[in-house]
Length: 337
Image 1 (cartoon, one colour):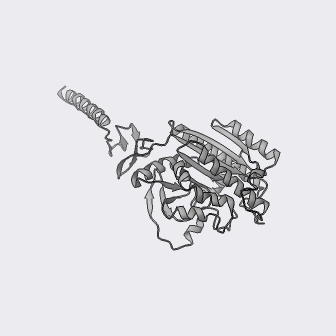
Image 2 (cartoon, one colour):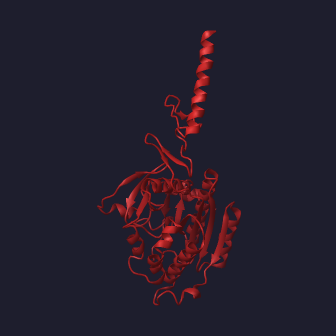
Image 3 (cartoon, helix red, strand yellow):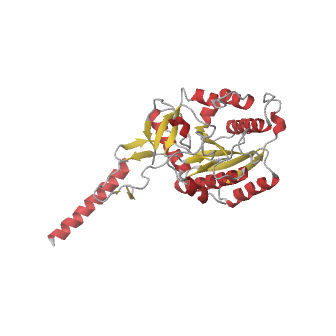
């Protein structure tokens, strides 16, 4: 009988201790049961609390310095051009609209997944389109309307950009520049914490947006400064013998890089600060087109996920395309509409 009383007393003290730790903001790890009593979670679950703290075992807790409350995703679409100014075919050998539709589907799934996990963040998906057929635009709108996320579709008036973009470019290149330019104008005008610029040939993993937001908050808190995040682990970055660094995100590693294509996530304040440099990409095409972005990376950390959170559906032999060690076929099939 005495033993039972001792157990009751022990359980009472344990519950009291857990409550006290919660009040003080401390977390307890029970390694014997592989859980956290204060969080009420198993250790293989997400232990971080968005906007408050990032927890990585065994490194401990980081208090979040910048809470993300809103994210706008700007998807630039154009279904009329397979690969800009090239005759190459893409992986899976489909027409361009197929990649656009599947990119949109995968992005919506990733946003909906993030909405469930990050309930205090408002999400909006803005699709900006140039030169897509009426049938393809109808299909894009149908996919958007089936989703549960806040969305907007914009057909870009290319006439507006004729006096802004230098002459002499192909129709495809002019369209691409105008679409990105328009995205910058939206990013400058819309009030939001983060902007995610996306091209329409990136298949996203379901957890991509969630990981990017958690990791952005964590890295900003570590460095007390802005960071730019990429969704893709580009193969061409492994062809160079550059010095790099590896950081721990929420569930994956992130690698310091100095180059990227034009799909990236950044804060609105960073876009405003570097608007004049980024605007050059909408005015004049100087190879490499991404040079103004690369200039920003000289003073602002740019991080790429390892393994990749999204795959660029280029030609299979392109070093700018398929990320290594990813089940692309599964990602392709699960993004079917």
